[in-house]
Length: 77
Image 1 (cartoon, one colour):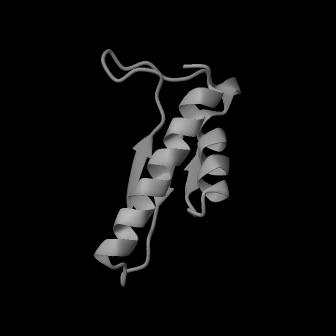
Image 2 (image 1 turned 60 degrees about the vertical axis):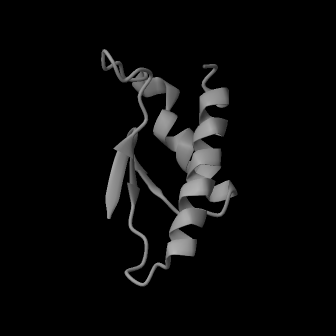
């Protein structure tokens, strides 16, 4: 299991306005790309199966990155 946060800026730390729904936008993009992740606010939770192969992990990361890029564009960054 792992998690990460969608933030406007890492240094100094700046979060998105809650009304923007950055986590929900990311989750929707991830699902559209075939990755099932959970959003809790702007925190994204990933719980892949214990039997995940290296190839499947690479695919998960690649698709999650595409969703992150799409979210970046959707939030006007």
